[in-house]
Length: 255
Image 1 (cartoon, helix red, strand yellow):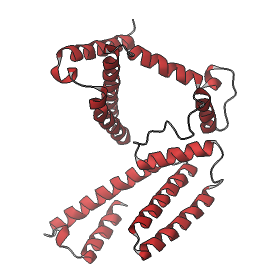
Image 2: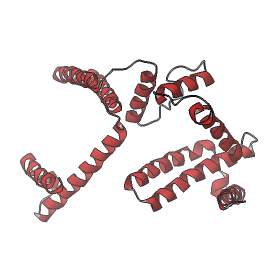
Image 3: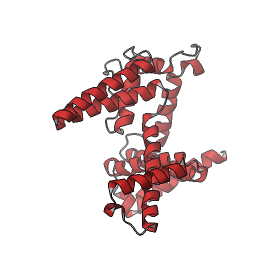
Image 4: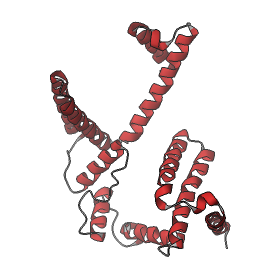
């Protein structure tokens, strides 16, 4: 047995022991572990963004632990085990990559081909069915757009999407002037959805782009706070003019 399989076997045995002897692990269910699966996935994303391979390795291990725990719980009930999970995903990957594991030519539109293969597997499934609605909103919007595009429902160019963005901004402005909060929310949602489509056409990740901007804002606002504290001031006590001046100064320093 090679070292990789030894490591996997060791993890499976450890999790089995935990489920047998640890009071906390014994009482866990698929449902109770859901929050931890989500947390570990998000922590893995942060580690990947940091570029620190030690952290990436650790966080991916935490995700794997969740997969093994769910598999162990299922095996106790005779539903499936970790080996079944591995077999299922292996079979799916082979089935959905006939250009790699078969004789099909490499598809020009991979997303379209992927959707076609999925549709063959589950012909009764609705077009957008199977996409988790619990995904972060921007990711969900961009994924919906990708699927719709794979069946031909899409703009042809980024310029066309940009025109739609401008149209949605005007519609939002109208509702803001009317002070119609419900309509403004609807138009804001439409604008965000179209922006996710613009990101898709530009081959960008809308979620990643927003996360980067949020990180940049966090960095700058904390520096503004530190700058003002050095001057003996608190942000909450400063005038808009003082805050703007501090923001511009920090922005120039970090640009």
